Image (cartoon, rainbow, N blue to C red; front, side, top):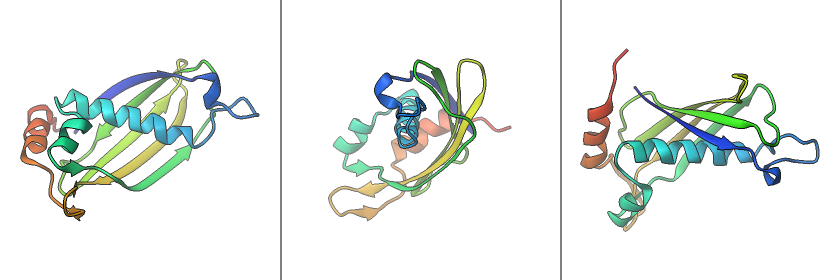
Length: 137
């Protein structure tokens, strides 16, 4: 398992008329967490795309527990629960500055060769980076 934490401040524009974070914004928060987890591996989306591989979302599931509000400082814990194959599975726990659990999500991405638009296995450099940080528990 690999775990990474990222913080995001809720902007005014992220909220709806009820003063809660608009439900669609949570997908963006997950993306921020995922991007930073990948960066913590020493890899970036840009490098993967330059190498001819993209990671589109195949599945997105979320459960809302409590609303986030304007100016909350959110901690997004992004977890890589299993080593990548052709899939890159990430799980998320989102908490506010009071430690209240706001949302739980799971995103399944797939490695796709840009030139052929075909699903491929995770590149070796991704697997090597994951192996370096993998923790069993």
